[in-house]
Image (cartoon, rainbow, N blue to C red):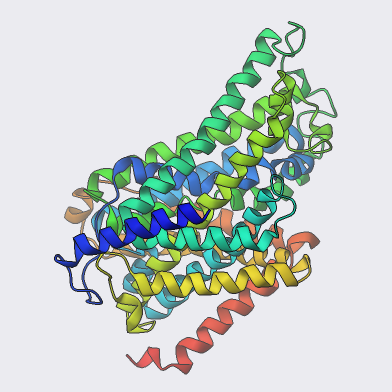
Length: 475
């Protein structure tokens, strides 16, 4: 661990020396455009495919049974509409912190302020959980080492990676995401081998009858499908990061559309494909009783150290989410500072072309998060997750509303010249907004998620108070 820290530090120092001649340290330069097509595609995949799929999918399956596949398909189509709306604006005006800036431009300064700070806080609280998770996962291999040491080490390394250069961040995230994707693809192929050829089942094909043999395809009816929707949408949190990267993408007019279109289909295949295989092989009402479905799958074909393999994959998933979170929070603070809605210190760019002070500020708060997750009861984690869920719905709603207003500012001639357009405008955007309202209504209806409709609005009210208290409405 110490050697890894030393290597990252050396890379950082070399990069600073090389870049110092190009930019003045502490100046207000533009962010470095160092993210390529493969970086952005894998970043958005990595952000959306997280620990929830590997370990949390069992909970969603218990709610809806095999019909969870319908929930993921519906949720995925709504996300595609949202992402196309974001892509239309991002290609037309590629800026860092995109949807916060678009809210500022098309819905007003207050909307931009709330959206930027809300998304920043969303990732801060999400990263708190992920960093703590790193410590938990490492204890599987090093049970005698305190978890907080691993959590702190992960935070320091990921922060340094984000300070080196945006391309270094992109490389780390590329490989982190690739590990998760390889694990999912391997599991899908292994699963189809069991289903079709009976691999690991004495040559007897398992088939897919488990999808309807244990109470039917939708054993809990429409209620079960509705109950699972909020969890499904939370699983998709992270795909909007494509918009955050727009200000640092090489050739964004080509990269952003391609990333949005390919990421949607890949995520849908990974989620639906993986869960289809798992529920075909194992009765849905037994999944989760004997550990992770992914561990069971690899053990099925005789891979003994399956638990260790999946633990490594989930560890990289947590590091990936932490890496993405630090990136997102730094860019959001940078964008808020540019709009004069945060301290001007946060828009200072270091010699590596990254908003160093914004990144370090977020990292310090994450350090507090490690301590809080160590000290406070388990219920606090539910509150953190609730804020993240509410924050995600808010962000997606703002993206849709901004795109609707954006279109109204264009003439027919300008609309015809848009190289990348939202789907089914304006009906697609209104339909997606209605779906998001449905998700909020379901969160309010079911007791387990009702807390989100308490904590979320309180946070928004606090931001509104801060906006007017600081006199930002007069600027």
